[in-house]
Length: 363
Image (cartoon, one colour):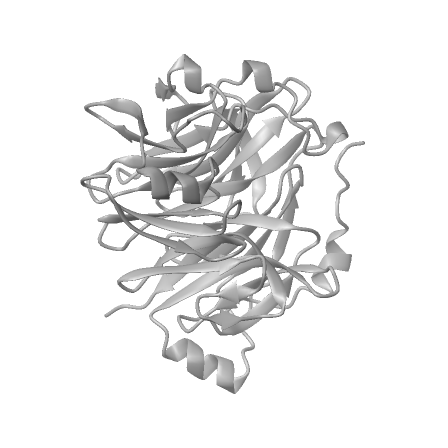
Protein backbone atom coordinates (compact mmCIF):
# COMPACT_ATOMS: atom_id res chain seq x y z
CA UNK A 1 0.00 0.00 0.00
CA UNK A 2 1.03 3.60 -0.60
CA UNK A 3 2.46 5.64 2.31
CA UNK A 4 -0.22 7.12 4.56
CA UNK A 5 -0.44 10.91 4.73
CA UNK A 6 -0.51 12.20 8.30
CA UNK A 7 -3.33 14.64 9.05
CA UNK A 8 -1.60 17.96 9.69
CA UNK A 9 -4.00 19.27 12.37
CA UNK A 10 -3.76 16.04 14.36
CA UNK A 11 0.03 16.17 14.39
CA UNK A 12 0.36 19.87 15.17
CA UNK A 13 -1.87 19.52 18.22
CA UNK A 14 0.95 17.68 19.98
CA UNK A 15 4.02 18.99 18.23
CA UNK A 16 4.85 22.05 20.31
CA UNK A 17 6.12 25.36 18.95
CA UNK A 18 9.42 26.70 17.73
CA UNK A 19 12.47 24.69 18.70
CA UNK A 20 14.00 27.63 20.53
CA UNK A 21 10.71 29.07 21.75
CA UNK A 22 8.71 28.65 24.98
CA UNK A 23 11.63 27.19 26.90
CA UNK A 24 11.43 26.72 30.64
CA UNK A 25 13.83 29.02 32.55
CA UNK A 26 16.25 26.17 33.32
CA UNK A 27 16.35 25.12 29.67
CA UNK A 28 16.85 28.70 28.52
CA UNK A 29 19.75 29.09 30.94
CA UNK A 30 21.40 25.90 29.67
CA UNK A 31 20.89 27.09 26.13
CA UNK A 32 22.58 30.42 26.83
CA UNK A 33 25.69 28.58 27.99
CA UNK A 34 25.96 26.24 25.02
CA UNK A 35 28.24 26.88 22.06
CA UNK A 36 26.50 24.24 19.97
CA UNK A 37 23.14 22.49 19.84
CA UNK A 38 22.28 19.05 18.57
CA UNK A 39 19.17 17.42 17.15
CA UNK A 40 18.38 13.72 17.12
CA UNK A 41 15.32 11.62 16.46
CA UNK A 42 14.21 9.04 19.00
CA UNK A 43 11.69 6.38 20.01
CA UNK A 44 10.37 6.75 23.55
CA UNK A 45 9.41 4.15 26.14
CA UNK A 46 5.78 4.21 24.93
CA UNK A 47 6.87 3.52 21.33
CA UNK A 48 6.10 7.08 20.32
CA UNK A 49 8.46 9.01 18.04
CA UNK A 50 9.95 12.43 18.33
CA UNK A 51 13.01 14.61 17.97
CA UNK A 52 14.96 16.33 20.68
CA UNK A 53 17.15 19.42 20.87
CA UNK A 54 20.13 18.91 23.18
CA UNK A 55 22.77 21.28 24.50
CA UNK A 56 26.51 20.73 24.58
CA UNK A 57 26.18 18.86 27.89
CA UNK A 58 23.79 16.36 26.25
CA UNK A 59 20.87 17.71 28.27
CA UNK A 60 17.53 17.75 26.44
CA UNK A 61 16.46 21.37 25.91
CA UNK A 62 13.17 20.59 24.15
CA UNK A 63 11.35 17.65 22.59
CA UNK A 64 8.90 17.57 19.71
CA UNK A 65 6.58 14.83 18.48
CA UNK A 66 7.02 13.23 15.06
CA UNK A 67 4.26 11.38 13.19
CA UNK A 68 6.46 8.27 12.90
CA UNK A 69 10.12 7.31 12.99
CA UNK A 70 12.54 10.06 12.03
CA UNK A 71 16.00 9.67 10.53
CA UNK A 72 18.19 12.54 9.33
CA UNK A 73 18.01 16.33 9.27
CA UNK A 74 18.65 19.39 7.18
CA UNK A 75 19.84 22.52 8.95
CA UNK A 76 19.23 25.98 7.54
CA UNK A 77 22.44 27.99 6.99
CA UNK A 78 21.14 30.77 9.27
CA UNK A 79 19.55 28.29 11.71
CA UNK A 80 16.08 29.60 10.76
CA UNK A 81 14.76 26.08 10.14
CA UNK A 82 15.49 22.58 11.30
CA UNK A 83 13.93 19.89 9.09
CA UNK A 84 13.51 16.29 10.23
CA UNK A 85 12.89 13.64 7.59
CA UNK A 86 11.01 10.38 7.89
CA UNK A 87 12.96 7.16 7.70
CA UNK A 88 12.61 5.37 4.37
CA UNK A 89 9.95 4.70 3.08
CA UNK A 90 8.19 7.47 5.01
CA UNK A 91 6.83 10.47 3.15
CA UNK A 92 6.61 13.19 5.83
CA UNK A 93 9.02 15.90 6.88
CA UNK A 94 8.67 18.34 9.76
CA UNK A 95 10.24 21.81 9.69
CA UNK A 96 10.70 23.54 13.05
CA UNK A 97 11.26 27.32 12.97
CA UNK A 98 13.69 29.15 15.16
CA UNK A 99 11.35 32.08 15.77
CA UNK A 100 9.29 31.98 18.94
CA UNK A 101 6.18 32.99 16.99
CA UNK A 102 6.66 30.31 14.37
CA UNK A 103 4.78 27.06 14.00
CA UNK A 104 6.02 23.69 12.77
CA UNK A 105 5.40 22.96 9.10
CA UNK A 106 4.50 19.41 8.09
CA UNK A 107 4.93 18.59 4.42
CA UNK A 108 4.93 15.46 2.28
CA UNK A 109 6.29 14.01 -0.91
CA UNK A 110 3.90 13.55 -3.82
CA UNK A 111 1.96 10.25 -3.67
CA UNK A 112 4.42 8.43 -5.97
CA UNK A 113 7.53 9.49 -4.03
CA UNK A 114 8.98 8.83 -0.59
CA UNK A 115 11.86 10.33 1.33
CA UNK A 116 15.18 8.60 1.93
CA UNK A 117 15.76 10.38 5.23
CA UNK A 118 18.20 13.15 4.27
CA UNK A 119 18.30 16.59 2.70
CA UNK A 120 20.27 19.83 2.41
CA UNK A 121 19.49 23.54 2.08
CA UNK A 122 20.78 25.82 -0.63
CA UNK A 123 23.47 28.29 0.40
CA UNK A 124 20.93 31.10 0.76
CA UNK A 125 18.51 28.88 2.67
CA UNK A 126 15.63 29.40 0.25
CA UNK A 127 15.45 25.89 -1.20
CA UNK A 128 15.45 22.54 0.55
CA UNK A 129 16.75 19.58 -1.46
CA UNK A 130 15.50 16.15 -0.38
CA UNK A 131 16.56 12.65 -1.39
CA UNK A 132 13.53 10.82 -2.77
CA UNK A 133 12.50 7.63 -4.56
CA UNK A 134 10.25 7.63 -7.63
CA UNK A 135 9.28 4.14 -6.60
CA UNK A 136 7.24 3.04 -9.61
CA UNK A 137 10.30 3.44 -11.86
CA UNK A 138 13.01 3.03 -9.22
CA UNK A 139 14.67 6.31 -10.22
CA UNK A 140 16.29 8.49 -7.60
CA UNK A 141 15.19 12.12 -7.56
CA UNK A 142 16.02 15.27 -5.63
CA UNK A 143 12.82 16.99 -4.53
CA UNK A 144 12.94 20.78 -4.28
CA UNK A 145 10.92 22.62 -1.61
CA UNK A 146 10.47 26.36 -1.07
CA UNK A 147 11.50 27.31 2.48
CA UNK A 148 10.00 30.78 1.98
CA UNK A 149 6.54 29.40 1.12
CA UNK A 150 5.67 26.74 3.66
CA UNK A 151 7.96 24.19 1.99
CA UNK A 152 5.71 23.94 -1.03
CA UNK A 153 7.14 21.69 -3.72
CA UNK A 154 8.89 23.49 -6.56
CA UNK A 155 9.80 20.43 -8.62
CA UNK A 156 12.57 17.87 -8.82
CA UNK A 157 15.54 16.70 -10.82
CA UNK A 158 17.27 13.35 -11.21
CA UNK A 159 19.75 12.13 -8.61
CA UNK A 160 21.43 10.31 -11.51
CA UNK A 161 21.29 7.00 -9.69
CA UNK A 162 19.14 4.65 -7.63
CA UNK A 163 18.44 5.05 -3.93
CA UNK A 164 19.83 8.53 -3.16
CA UNK A 165 20.59 8.77 0.52
CA UNK A 166 22.65 11.57 2.04
CA UNK A 167 22.96 14.90 0.22
CA UNK A 168 25.56 17.53 1.06
CA UNK A 169 26.15 21.00 -0.34
CA UNK A 170 29.79 21.32 -1.30
CA UNK A 171 31.91 24.24 -0.03
CA UNK A 172 31.43 26.13 -3.31
CA UNK A 173 27.77 26.62 -2.34
CA UNK A 174 26.65 25.61 -5.84
CA UNK A 175 27.22 21.86 -6.13
CA UNK A 176 25.27 19.05 -4.53
CA UNK A 177 27.04 15.82 -3.73
CA UNK A 178 24.61 12.90 -3.67
CA UNK A 179 25.30 9.40 -2.40
CA UNK A 180 23.23 7.07 -4.59
CA UNK A 181 23.11 3.93 -2.47
CA UNK A 182 22.18 1.78 -5.46
CA UNK A 183 19.37 -0.15 -3.74
CA UNK A 184 15.90 -0.15 -5.23
CA UNK A 185 12.92 -0.27 -2.89
CA UNK A 186 9.13 0.04 -3.12
CA UNK A 187 6.80 0.97 -0.24
CA UNK A 188 4.59 -2.02 -1.03
CA UNK A 189 7.55 -4.15 0.10
CA UNK A 190 8.49 -1.95 3.06
CA UNK A 191 12.27 -1.84 3.44
CA UNK A 192 12.96 -4.93 1.32
CA UNK A 193 15.95 -4.54 -1.02
CA UNK A 194 14.80 -5.48 -4.51
CA UNK A 195 17.90 -5.39 -6.72
CA UNK A 196 20.92 -6.63 -4.76
CA UNK A 197 22.44 -8.62 -7.67
CA UNK A 198 22.42 -5.54 -9.93
CA UNK A 199 23.22 -2.77 -7.44
CA UNK A 200 25.14 0.16 -8.90
CA UNK A 201 25.99 2.69 -6.18
CA UNK A 202 27.56 6.00 -7.19
CA UNK A 203 28.45 9.48 -6.02
CA UNK A 204 27.00 12.23 -8.20
CA UNK A 205 28.00 15.89 -8.34
CA UNK A 206 25.02 17.93 -9.52
CA UNK A 207 24.72 21.63 -10.29
CA UNK A 208 22.01 22.73 -7.92
CA UNK A 209 20.72 25.62 -10.01
CA UNK A 210 19.94 23.43 -13.03
CA UNK A 211 20.06 19.78 -11.94
CA UNK A 212 22.84 19.16 -14.47
CA UNK A 213 25.08 16.19 -13.76
CA UNK A 214 28.64 17.46 -13.46
CA UNK A 215 30.33 14.16 -12.64
CA UNK A 216 29.47 10.65 -11.51
CA UNK A 217 31.83 8.29 -9.72
CA UNK A 218 31.52 4.55 -9.08
CA UNK A 219 33.60 1.99 -7.23
CA UNK A 220 35.23 -0.97 -9.00
CA UNK A 221 32.84 -3.66 -10.21
CA UNK A 222 33.79 -6.07 -7.42
CA UNK A 223 32.45 -3.52 -4.90
CA UNK A 224 29.08 -2.99 -6.54
CA UNK A 225 27.31 -4.30 -3.43
CA UNK A 226 28.82 -1.64 -1.19
CA UNK A 227 25.89 0.73 -0.80
CA UNK A 228 27.29 4.27 -0.51
CA UNK A 229 25.19 6.09 2.10
CA UNK A 230 26.69 8.78 4.32
CA UNK A 231 29.21 11.52 3.61
CA UNK A 232 31.31 14.26 5.14
CA UNK A 233 33.78 16.77 3.65
CA UNK A 234 37.18 17.23 5.27
CA UNK A 235 39.36 20.33 5.50
CA UNK A 236 40.93 19.70 2.08
CA UNK A 237 37.63 19.27 0.26
CA UNK A 238 37.79 15.48 0.09
CA UNK A 239 34.48 13.67 0.45
CA UNK A 240 34.52 10.67 2.78
CA UNK A 241 31.79 8.10 2.23
CA UNK A 242 30.58 5.40 4.57
CA UNK A 243 29.20 2.25 2.96
CA UNK A 244 27.02 -0.66 4.00
CA UNK A 245 27.94 -3.97 2.42
CA UNK A 246 25.13 -6.12 1.00
CA UNK A 247 27.24 -9.11 -0.09
CA UNK A 248 28.66 -12.23 1.53
CA UNK A 249 29.60 -11.67 5.17
CA UNK A 250 32.86 -13.52 4.54
CA UNK A 251 34.02 -11.09 1.84
CA UNK A 252 36.97 -8.86 2.70
CA UNK A 253 35.48 -5.52 1.71
CA UNK A 254 36.41 -1.95 2.73
CA UNK A 255 33.52 -0.07 4.24
CA UNK A 256 34.89 3.41 3.49
CA UNK A 257 35.73 5.33 0.34
CA UNK A 258 37.02 8.81 -0.36
CA UNK A 259 36.60 11.07 -3.33
CA UNK A 260 39.10 13.71 -4.38
CA UNK A 261 39.71 15.75 -7.51
CA UNK A 262 43.03 14.10 -8.28
CA UNK A 263 42.24 10.43 -7.59
CA UNK A 264 38.48 10.09 -8.03
CA UNK A 265 36.56 7.60 -5.89
CA UNK A 266 38.79 5.07 -4.17
CA UNK A 267 38.16 2.52 -1.42
CA UNK A 268 39.89 3.05 1.93
CA UNK A 269 41.48 0.00 3.52
CA UNK A 270 41.51 0.05 7.31
CA UNK A 271 43.86 -1.95 9.50
CA UNK A 272 42.45 -5.03 11.19
CA UNK A 273 41.07 -3.46 14.38
CA UNK A 274 39.28 -0.67 12.53
CA UNK A 275 37.77 -2.93 9.88
CA UNK A 276 36.64 -5.52 12.43
CA UNK A 277 35.07 -2.87 14.64
CA UNK A 278 32.94 -1.46 11.82
CA UNK A 279 31.73 -4.86 10.64
CA UNK A 280 31.27 -3.81 6.97
CA UNK A 281 28.64 -1.24 8.03
CA UNK A 282 29.13 2.51 8.45
CA UNK A 283 25.97 3.93 9.98
CA UNK A 284 27.09 7.54 10.32
CA UNK A 285 30.14 9.69 9.54
CA UNK A 286 31.30 13.13 10.71
CA UNK A 287 34.30 15.42 10.30
CA UNK A 288 35.88 17.30 13.21
CA UNK A 289 35.61 21.07 13.29
CA UNK A 290 39.21 21.46 12.13
CA UNK A 291 38.62 19.02 9.26
CA UNK A 292 41.49 16.76 10.33
CA UNK A 293 39.63 13.80 11.84
CA UNK A 294 36.92 11.53 10.48
CA UNK A 295 34.58 9.69 12.84
CA UNK A 296 32.78 6.57 11.61
CA UNK A 297 30.13 4.87 13.74
CA UNK A 298 28.74 1.36 13.31
CA UNK A 299 25.68 0.07 15.18
CA UNK A 300 26.48 -3.48 14.03
CA UNK A 301 29.40 -3.71 16.43
CA UNK A 302 28.75 -0.61 18.50
CA UNK A 303 31.95 1.12 17.46
CA UNK A 304 33.28 4.61 16.84
CA UNK A 305 36.46 4.68 14.76
CA UNK A 306 38.50 7.88 14.37
CA UNK A 307 40.79 8.35 11.35
CA UNK A 308 43.34 10.96 10.36
CA UNK A 309 41.99 12.52 7.14
CA UNK A 310 45.48 13.31 5.86
CA UNK A 311 47.09 9.89 6.35
CA UNK A 312 44.03 7.65 6.58
CA UNK A 313 45.47 6.04 9.71
CA UNK A 314 43.21 4.95 12.56
CA UNK A 315 43.64 7.14 15.63
CA UNK A 316 41.34 5.25 17.98
CA UNK A 317 38.65 2.58 18.20
CA UNK A 318 36.03 2.87 20.92
CA UNK A 319 33.38 0.21 21.51
CA UNK A 320 30.00 1.53 22.68
CA UNK A 321 27.01 -0.85 22.29
CA UNK A 322 24.27 0.31 19.90
CA UNK A 323 26.13 3.43 18.79
CA UNK A 324 25.28 4.96 15.42
CA UNK A 325 24.88 8.74 15.72
CA UNK A 326 28.07 10.79 15.68
CA UNK A 327 28.77 14.50 15.29
CA UNK A 328 31.62 16.97 15.82
CA UNK A 329 31.65 18.66 19.21
CA UNK A 330 34.28 21.03 20.56
CA UNK A 331 37.65 19.49 19.79
CA UNK A 332 36.20 15.98 19.47
CA UNK A 333 32.94 14.15 18.80
CA UNK A 334 29.72 13.24 20.54
CA UNK A 335 27.93 9.97 19.82
CA UNK A 336 24.53 8.47 20.62
CA UNK A 337 23.09 4.98 20.86
CA UNK A 338 19.86 3.03 20.63
CA UNK A 339 20.33 2.23 24.33
CA UNK A 340 19.70 5.87 25.30
CA UNK A 341 23.25 7.11 25.70
CA UNK A 342 24.00 10.57 24.31
CA UNK A 343 27.55 11.62 25.03
CA UNK A 344 28.13 10.79 28.68
CA UNK A 345 24.46 11.05 29.66
CA UNK A 346 21.63 8.55 29.48
CA UNK A 347 18.04 9.29 28.48
CA UNK A 348 15.02 6.98 28.51
CA UNK A 349 14.76 6.85 24.72
CA UNK A 350 16.30 4.93 21.83
CA UNK A 351 18.20 7.43 19.70
CA UNK A 352 17.97 7.03 15.94
CA UNK A 353 20.91 6.89 13.53
CA UNK A 354 22.03 10.51 13.20
CA UNK A 355 22.92 13.67 15.09
CA UNK A 356 22.65 17.11 13.48
CA UNK A 357 24.66 20.12 14.64
CA UNK A 358 22.28 23.05 14.87
CA UNK A 359 23.96 26.20 15.99
CA UNK A 360 27.44 27.34 16.92
CA UNK A 361 27.29 30.54 18.91
CA UNK A 362 29.63 33.37 17.87
CA UNK A 363 32.88 33.42 19.79
